[in-house]
Image (cartoon, rainbow, N blue to C red):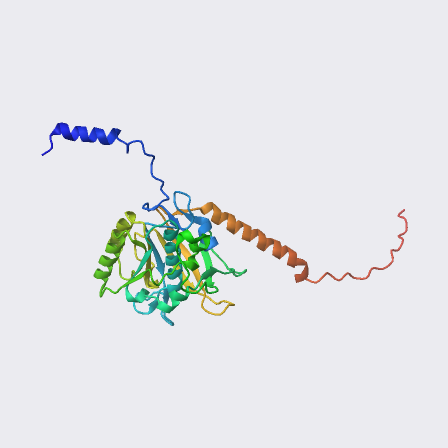
Length: 328
């Protein structure tokens, strides 16, 4: 057993040794949960970010995405059966997280927990892109609401492109990161095993993104996952049914996804930010500036169209002026 004098000498050596003068670690490097992953969607990256200034969704935090209900199901229906998660959006974000990890030379494995969130392998092998679409000019939004219109874009480069970050800047493009070969699929048979699997995945240093079926997870479960994610560097994406929007949760951000019509072929969505707290920084001043610019543009358009909206007035013919007799 080491004597007290030996312990004090060891502590003194640690205080004055070569490690004592090392600078504080950068909060935006591998191993720290404060780093943010860019979503690739300008409206979201402009207003969200980490405490270190990186734009996007913060790693080491739980982000909930409420899916789309089935046809004809009422919004108040709390069933966990008749709904579908926004898989293309989640796959897009998982690919961005893997690209971010590859660019830093970190492990870049993605785990999909729950059969409901398993993407079709051919879909993630084709690497479909999700881009930000144009907002309808007559769209109404409440003050402070963050909403972005998303739609499928053109397919990226075919599978087989190298993802070695040492092979040029193009290797850091999300299109060049193969997601299928980096994916792990888990199928827990019930909610308790799903919770255990998510918690275990967050404690694995090789996981860069966790996409999981979060249906039926209560406040205690999400609090447990949030605490586990804090010590991780993974981007945690929970897909939940739309009927659970009013459930209390410890998630850092919550997003509502709704289908919408689009001029392009294929599906389109509206993603609305419902809440952001904790490590996820939200630049509300940029939200207000963006809305003010839209209001000014809308007002300018209305003023420009005002002369065309109403016909010019028709003036009545005037008669020649007559002289009035002088008053006496």
